[in-house]
Length: 158
Image 1 (cartoon, rainbow, N blue to C red):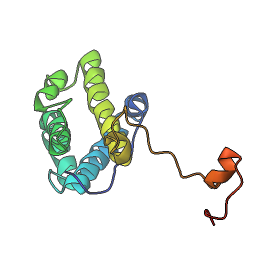
Image 2 (cartoon, rainbow, N blue to C red):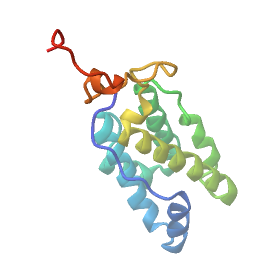
Image 3 (cartoon, rainbow, N blue to C red):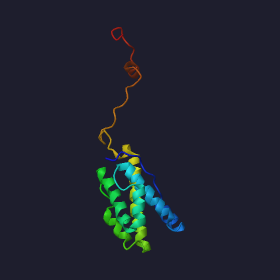
Image 4 (spheres, one colour):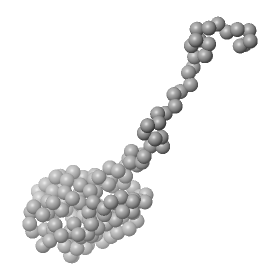
């Protein structure tokens, strides 16, 4: 189970649009932060600096590495992997096709956001200690029993 700090959620469309507006500069930041947050969470993976270097030198490799590490985070917590290294095929060849690149970003960032949501609220994901059909016991009444019945206490009661 992962025990490091929870990463920052980022809007899927924000990541896509700000990346386009900045001519890809934001995506470099995104790669660094995403890889760094995943490594801090699990203690495994490339991390920010090495992840960014891989992105810059052999960008297509990161298309496979990022979803693979994300899927491994889910698996490490005993959950089904929503993305795997094969998700990188959406960016092949080299993300030059717009629609597949958007699908890749939606799948990866969406899965990452869901992971951070679940990690931030572990109590909500954990099942309750009480069975669903067994209500919690009622609290003890602060009113003495004789007051509920309306009877006067007798000498033997006191």
